Image (tube, rainbow over all chains, first blue to last red; front, side, top):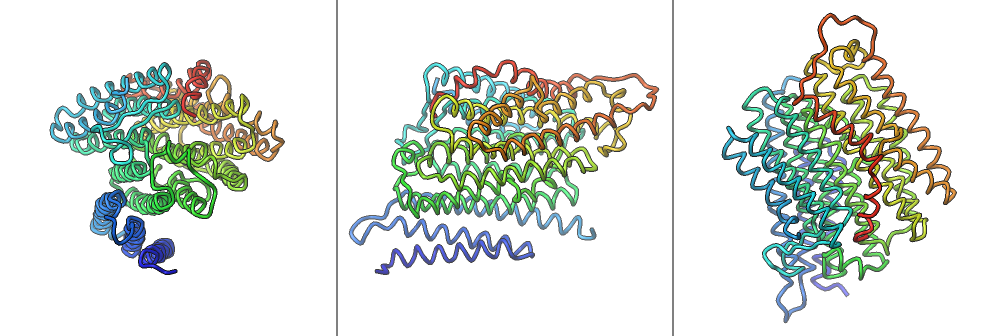
Length: 95
Length: 478
């Protein structure tokens, strides 16, 4: 039976697979950075779905903590990628 | 004794912050924290050797809630190797970067990489592995970009994207494991893990991400440009330690945590990819025009040997023969770490003194830089696997295991790879010992040249002659 939890978990997997596909196949740098972020969102969605423990129980806090840490890591990594890309474009645009 | 665990992470982290705040005294900070970290690593080896596996719960939080650090024989050995390599690299890096501004940017990142590496090797649960993998990747990428050239920036960016993709796959696997088992603690998982579609998918995702990060053929495409365009001390740790960290995780997952869920077909696949890496990497190293590219492709090849151990470990029944093989793969990894780090430092010296690292134009290097040339010869010895290097014992175990289990393919590949390694090493030495007369006097500058010499000598002499205690230490925890 398709419960809400399964719906979220499966959607997470689909989003992750889409991100992975784009990250592997797109030649454009910016798109690949975005694709990796989308892939991350899929993983986070899966983790949030895992945390659900039924209507009467509070959700499991551990996956939530993992998602928060994961978001921090993803933001820093994206910032580094964009900074590198910008420096490359500014200083070495001609070669 | 368990405090050594937290010092190994806290000391380099504090050093990184101090080096950032006090750029004038950064070198003193690096040496002080480096020596302290290395001493802590020694204490860890002693502690694991006498008291067995060590645990430390940061802040007193129980497992599952807080960050748990854990050390057994394997992690203690790798932490020690990393500390020695990083310490030698620190001494060399001072003379490598001529401008103060370059050094000021370099030291904090260098210590951050040290922190991330130690935290990764000591992590007790899968999620901390993900976080430390990312920390290691981010600091390694930034250090690569310090090269500054368009080539270095492009390589760093590619390295970053590949690394991120690898860690995302790893995290996806971790989520599945938490969904299935409700824990991420590696010891608890090792007890409860079962075969099934969920575990299989998670293991494939995690291993796939790690193989991307450890540059196993054919996923090695990003390694040669990144390792060849980074500054020399950075190339040394990237090749010797950073890819080794990903390999350590594969070993940990396959041999330890998911030992019950690993299939022979999977191990054979890793072995086949490893064999491909040995042949392709060695061939490209032989054809390389530049010393740094040669060293980078040789890393691809040497990682291949490590993965060729997986099918042996899968078929050998638990017992003395298998323990010998486990010791062999670790000894091979340690030897390669020391040898390749020393080799990259030596190449850095040649590159700065001669203004290039083109192999064809090395004529007279032996007369000009005798110590550095000797370091390259010692490093090459360890890469080929000549006795008394540690690699000789490691490859011996690989051959012995392959012959005992009748897996002749690995024997043939090991022999071919070693011959190719001999060919690329002697090609470099042949050019370096050219007969061109050199009018000047040979020079040796201790602080610049000794780190490389000590590292390669450790790989090719110390590890081979004094490798026995390693097996005793490895019995702890596995």
